[in-house]
Amino acid sequence: MTPRRKTHQVMVGGVPIGGDAPVAIQSMTSTNTHDIDATVRQIRTLAEAGCDIVRVAVPEKRDTAALPSILEQSPVPIVADVHFHFQRAIEAIEAGVHKIRLNPGNIKDRKQVDRVIAACRDRRIPIRVGVNEGSVVERSDKDRRAREKGRLASDPRGEMIRLMVAILEDYMRIFDANDFHDVVISAKSIDAGMVIDAYRAVSERFDLPLHLGVTHAGPPETGRIRSIAALGSLLAMGIGDTIRISYAADPIHEVEDAKELLCSLSMRARVEPELIACPTCGRIEIDLIKLVADVRRKLVGIRVPVKVAVMGCVVNGPGEAEGADVAVFAGKGRGVIYVQGEQTRSVDEAEILDALYDETVAFAERVERGEASLTGAAVNIVPPDPLPRADGSIPLPVSRG
Ligand code: SF4
Image (cartoon, rainbow, N blue to C red; front, side, top):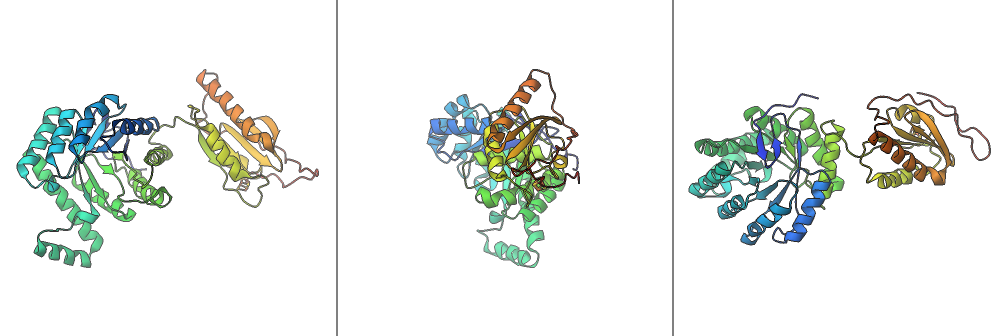
């Protein structure tokens, strides 16, 4: 992991972005913003799942009119997403939003752009500007469009990145002329490789905080790989101050995956159990895949980051489960449960789920009472003797390899 690149810090309500602040998770509501109850409900659900900042679209006046009530009820800072109407931006700022998402290039009248920037400066509200691969090529000036298309044909990736940086430089000239510096930048594409290259170029050019994202990533089934490949690579390079994973699905999945990404990179502390499971192989003698799914569901609600391992056998399971606070090793029709390296129970297959849950809850309660501590380090699990099969035969020799 490369150390985080230090950027200028901005405040989005009480959440810092950039500098040495932790990487913040963002998401966006999928409700009509003027439907206050539905929007507040979704904001609360996202916040409970770990979202730090929520963005809402404000395409119409009735949407900005809903903002005061939404802001009053929201547990996290709110960003207003404005596209073309500078008046919506002014209304959102006056309502008290914590950040504005807008591209100066979408508002033709420069005086209107200056008014929005002045209003944000007065209230110390940051603005996010962004470029998307799909909209950087010039549209109205035909000659310029032809020139850009020609250069793109000869060097698609290099020229696209040059265009993205050039547009951002144009935006920054407008902000500099207004002596406004609380800007967050994004540079998105649908292509994970392009996202990586674009943000690397942008991070070399600007010292402003970066909002990472892959645009139009698709449903979670496919968008997840695209997003994690791009965002995970950038974060590992020390690039990125806030992330939004975006899916064509309920935004709760965006937050869950963003949180898991940050936890996996040790950039955010876990607050819930971490589940480790073996990938299964020909040695498996119980329905481990179902057991893992059942354990995952059952652990929801435990608010202690206990490391729980569900392993299919005693051959490689103990070695691979090292560091687990609670672990089960399954054999034919039975499971042996360990708590921090000590064997505590041996139960029938039908009882594994409940027994593992009970041991996990009991251990979590001991942690909360200060009677036990989470390992955070390897626990030396001694493999149990091979579990005899129902016919009394011994399944496989125990090996620590
Ligand atoms: S723990 Fe056992 S069953 Fe699971 S993948 Fe490893 S060897 Fe196979």
